[in-house]
Length: 181
Image (cartoon, rainbow, N blue to C red):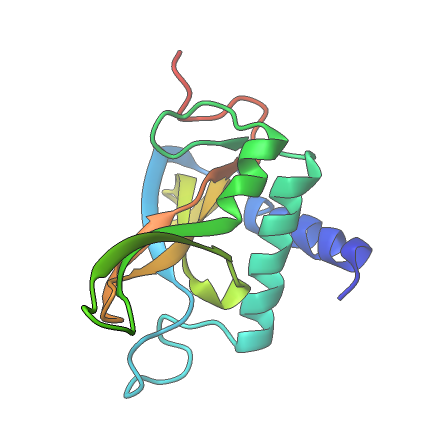
């Protein structure tokens, strides 16, 4: 998919996610939760905690390219400080310290830093920061996406899933909702 098409897709997603409108009273100004977009459970229906592969790839690619484009502000998940383009690019690389063993006697162990480019398939969750509204007339809840955070799978040396590492927040608001007031 071309970059222009990806930006169009991101804008369309943003409009779709934010076009719910502010109908009703504010239920919460901020709520944060993680959504699994690639289910590790093979026994579940395909749509449970899962996006169709092509749509998942399009979403992840659009979010990552939007973060790199400079069109939206991007923030560190721990400090909520804005990231520079160079810092965002570094987040696209996976750095892991690994202990390896030499293949010749006396078979000593040694530490080495392995640097790999993050693949889109490594991102299997998205963290959302949203506003929710309640329409008391019909009980309908609408949501406005304020920011999204792609989350990277993290594995142990033996290949077991350790958890998910949040990469950064991409904010769709002029003022990042988690920034210090």
